[in-house]
Length: 182
Image (cartoon, rainbow, N blue to C red):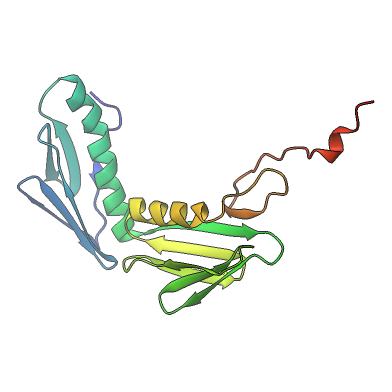
C-alpha cells in the first residue's frame, strides 16, 4: 500500500466533511471546497478521521491513492488553517499597490501592470515590496503566486524581479567582470 495513502486524515472540530457519490465536500469557517474522488479509490469517515482506501491493485490506482489522500488532506487543512505565500519585489523603483480588486505593479516597464485578484483569494500589500497571498485552496494560492511571479521573473545579473520569500536567485557574472583578452 501507499505509505502516504494509508495515513488517516484527522478532522478538526470546526470542519464538517460530507461524502456524496464520489464527491468529498469540506465546509468550515473559511469556506467550502469540493473534490471528485477517482473511481479507483473510496473515502469514508471512521472515528473522526477520513480514510482513503484503494479498490484495485493496478499501477494507476496505486499512483492515485496517495495523491487523492494528499488532495483531501490539503482541503481539510486549507479550511481549518488556510494557506499563504509571500512574494518579494526586488529592484530600484519596483513596487506594488492595491486598488479596487487589482494589484498595480511598477516593474520597470513603460506602463503599469494590472493583475486582477480572484474572489476566493485575499492579497495584502504590507509595504510596497512585500505581497502576501492567502486562501483556503492550496492549488489556487500557488497558481496566483506563480502568475504574479511570472509578471517579472528574477533576472540572474542584478536579481531584479518578483521572487518568493526565501528564494535564492543564482547570480551570473557580468561581461565586464571577465576582463579583457589581449
